[in-house]
Image (cartoon, rainbow, N blue to C red):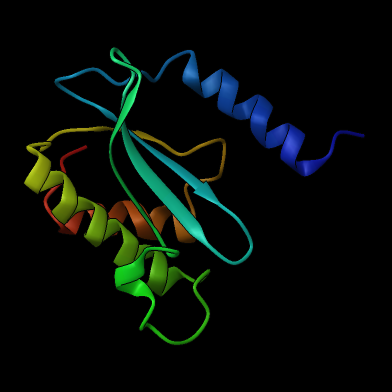
Length: 119
């Protein structure tokens, strides 16, 4: 039997064959753990991260409560979108990281869309 994380990584590899970020449309990559959620916008052509945001950022330290819930994921999406706007990124491709488009991943994507990212 394959462990859940190994199955997710296998799905992510399959997804990455189709999804790639460029300078014009970088890739928004999502990773979630039990307690936190991480997102970064990556230019795969240059191999560098343009913008990143997570629940471990210093500007979110004052937020109380559990960091690994849907509300925080939506907030991370909005923070990432505002950072991306300052970096000049408007359009992206979404890489869900092998996770279902559901719950925290969906909330992060909706928060990013509300913040002004187009995908």
